[in-house]
Image 1 (cartoon, one colour):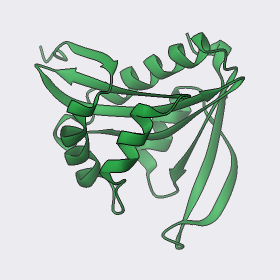
Image 2 (tube, rainbow, N blue to C red; image 1 turned 135 degrees about the vertical axis):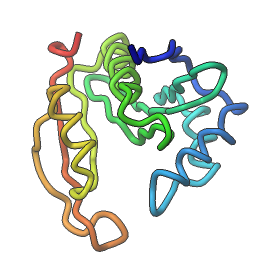
Image 3 (cartoon, rainbow, N blue to C red; image 1 turned 90 degrees about the horizontal axis):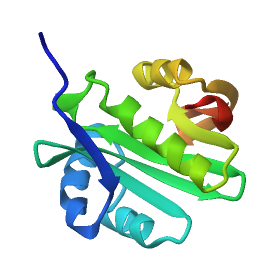
Length: 153
């Protein structure tokens, strides 16, 4: 039986950024810079989280929540750990945290070509609410997705 090892989710710290950057660079053609994550850690309305498995950061999600709206700014899982439910765990923690902060709606943007992520988001209750043409590197569309948070838990 192939069980998922224990994954612990906690707030991201400055000590995590190096591991987060390795996942970011492996996951995106135009990765965030170190400063983006540092800024998220320091920002008043941001709650970046990391998933830790056997002492190693294996994924992260950057959540911004202000009043009734929350947004997933960035999420990724180490390529070697994908397909094991870690992104789902991170997103569920983000939903619960956003609800705790008073949010009613969660939104995100995803590359139109990222079929696996779109499928996960749909399974978690997100719906397509629009498109931003040429959003990524001025060539790839972003699909805008939203979900009501009251149905998350």
